[in-house]
Amino acid sequence: MTRRAFYWPLLLGFFITGQIMSSATPSFAAQPGENAVISVWIGTSNAKPSKGIYHCTLNTQNGKLSDPTLAAEMGGPGFLAMHPNGSVLYAVGDVGGTASVAAFKIDGSGKDAKLTLLNSVAIGDGGAAHVAVDSKGKMLMTAQYGSGSVAAFSLNADGSVNQRTSLMKHEGGSRIVPNRQEAPHAHWAGFSPDERFAFVPDLGLDKVMIYKVDTDTATLTSHGFGQAPLGGGPRHMKFHPNGKWIFLLNELDLSVTVFDYDAENGTMTPKQTIPTVSKSELAKELFKSASEIRVHPNGKFVYSANRGHDTITVFKVNPQTGELSVIEHEHVRGATPRNFNLDPSGRWLLAAGQNSHTLASFAVNPTTGELTYNQNVVHAPSAICVLMQHE
Image (tube, rainbow, N blue to C red; front, side):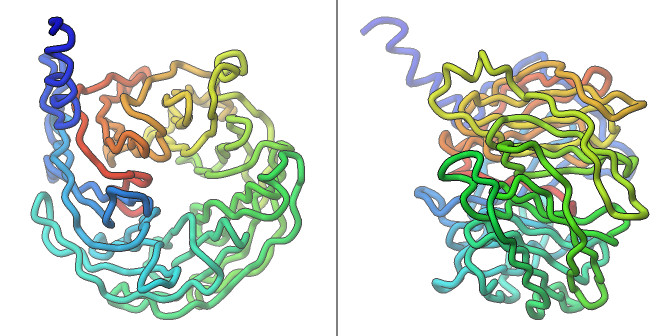
């Protein structure tokens, strides 16, 4: 046996368990009133070896992750959301053979956090690809990719789901990309900063559908749309902290479109579209697809994930215009980054590898936005959503 063959299984074992730690790993002191260890909730696909929602912790001083453990059994709890009070977790997936949104009570904190099912309500229009909750804990929305719709639900005082209050069906298809845009495919749902409007990027339409929101009645009313690049396939979007700019991630052509946002009128106007990875680099990939986009809490940087290329693209935000320029591409140390997230402080980025069943930790440089692999990766079965707080 060669020396390389002898050491490789050992190194692989260290990789999966996250035991290799660099002496150069950045260390951050916890801020006053800040927990050094916070909960990380992991949504998963319905593929083996996943069994449901997983939980681990992040040490915010050194960026180290604990080994994830199963917190609640559920079929394909792909995307998660949290009640603004931090005590209820929501998941969209299969409950008793029915596509539903489920509410779980969060008991305890840190490594001792547990989930207890409060209730679940059938979506009534197929399975959801995304879920979001308003800042007052009155209203929940789900986006249904397969049926091309957005649903709204009212919430009870204890955070449990009351009933479905709206179902908005999208129609048509841009038909630019064969087999992907023949019909509507709602992929994400979220609120404007003032929560007067809701936004639903639809991959099949090449549009961001906009709705007026009444959080007291948990209802939606059509309010036009924002136009995405034709063939782009809009997937996820985020607002800049200043509320003036929207960053839309286009899955099919791996790009980000920057919009000016008119908060008074609830309208969005595109002004820049920038590739996440150059076409020449993507040309050699058998599979390529953009998946998630995040804005750093300081508003200076935007991050997006590239499946196939298996990287995170780091963008610098022009403070005057909101337009983007690429800083770097950082490999996720895993395969198929369907999701990633920044911790509340913006000091750590956690990248989930769906096909590698991993969750890896990266330090974020607050001055340059650059990522440094923290040499810490843990086993996270079929991870496709990473959540640490209400969003």
